[in-house]
Image (cartoon, rainbow, N blue to C red; front, side):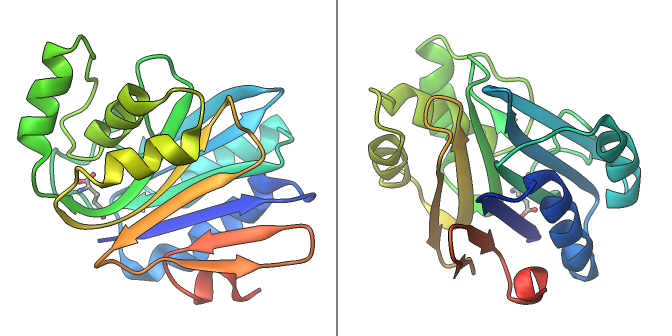
Length: 198
Ligand code: GLU
């Protein structure tokens, strides 16, 4: 089980996410990624390997974003490849999910979602979350996440970003740690306190 970081506020989310990911490194991980809403569009970067390699790819691009989520992964379902790295996206590329833990009932959920026409791109248990939220999405992302998590078994912490509702991060947890840091005009989310202490 590894790390989650999220930021929404007036500062540049890109730099804050990477400094949070660096502070989560001590937990151990095999891959890392971030999802940002930049210029109104969902933008995802992820790769197997070190946070530093990812940040060397992303930071020089000078992307400006006011909201984003990041993840360090310790693979439980599917090898540590780029396609299995979080964030995972729904079919439309509008909903991004990062997740710590294990979705115990992901197989029947995945079968049902594939039968309903969803295309999966990874071997993770996590990707079912993105498609399940998409399936429940009728224009209210909070309601969609609430409906999706009611179907889950296992221990999890997750953070969700939607291109259609770019001013907030939806979070949920059951049996895995996740904390919210409330600020003045900004909020953080993290799987542990050291990542947002600064
Ligand atoms: N079970 C998920 C995966 O294998 C999340 C693992 C984690 O907590 O980093 O992708």
